[in-house]
Length: 139
Image (cartoon, rainbow, N blue to C red):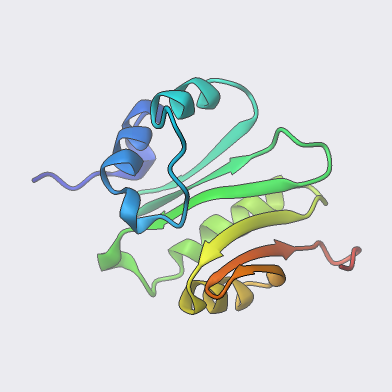
């Protein structure tokens, strides 16, 4: 099997990858997925950040925040700072807006906390809504 170079794939190929590997993402599958995602990604409300070993997709369709929808780093590349680089790219693109995300699991919550996010709501025992704020804002 050929290794995917995420910085060289189309939006459609990313959605196919997400669909085929959905269990690796902390996200709830909605009716119509992945067809609805392909439609949504064609709008200007999504930004893609790519690295050969990972990618991030952020929703920018709200005037008050940016939502980090997907973050993926190839397992063989974990621990090399790729996730942090992708998150930093999203923060930079947010241009002063808060960045929000949902995550499941205390390990993921700790990962994002280590990158400046704070849990703003605990949805269930192991599910969190988190937020990163630029230096000039506070929760």
